[in-house]
Length: 410
Image 1 (tube, one colour):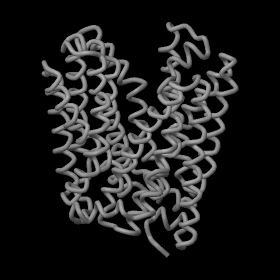
Image 2 (cartoon, helix red, strand yellow):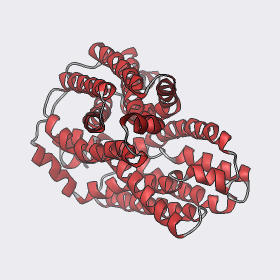
Image 3 (cartoon, helix red, strand yellow):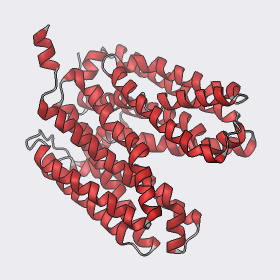
């Protein structure tokens, strides 16, 4: 028993590596999301409308979703250590350009560059964790790396917003530049220098998207996230108009929501530790019930808040499992595309956010806020159905959970 424990235990180097990769996602998350709290300041300073300033958010998401898989497919043939350092350096330059921007055009350009580089860095970070960490720790560590984005919303974004409000919005991007430099210095000393590289052309890797198994797995997180964002996109009017909560308390409740979403990453690690995909079939049903419950709890402030906090606990519960599942399917069907596959989860999440916001907008335009709940619940049930189909296809192809986790087909 002791030998098994020692084999699966993390070494000090692995622990520091996990921290470094988590810090990196924290820095990228802060850089991505902090603009949301500064849109008013940016629009006033650059003399643009609030709607145009909003494209700094949507433009980032679109660039992330389109640019990440394409660039990942191209650069994954190169050695990871110098590649990671080069990309972090470009990330820093992107934030410096943002800090120096005096026009909307230059700022949106810097945001697009930062978005694409961030997406590739996330993909490579997940791939490195999958290669380096012990088998039993891969799920929890990948969940921890994903948690960097959640923590950035709870800590990094409020600090960055405060800096921008007390000084100016450019100062916030000098703050994210500093965080990027810290990440670069740590990465120079911590990242493994010799990691295996499986070379394949971008065209060969993109062919992975034609694999029905990959397409099916890709849309599992898309519909799960869409279910949550159908509701979350309109969480402020739900709190104020639906639950009757004063505007002065909304920011504190959103902070609590962020704190509860950190628990979601802990849950994600436990789900991914063993038989993850088989568990997800039922996790999404639970998510659907929680989302649907808001239809009934909207009549009570406390009950409604309980539904929203439980929704936060479920939001990222599938991340680690899906991340490993996509990489492992790629290992089975096209090993050279593993890095490319690792970029797909964030892309699926961004598409899910856009889908959820669109569904929510349609519902609000044609009905009340309470109807968002059951629409979101249906989306989560679709994710559950896709997970059921994937699990059965694994069984039909004699690809068990243990084989999927190791990437070896029976």
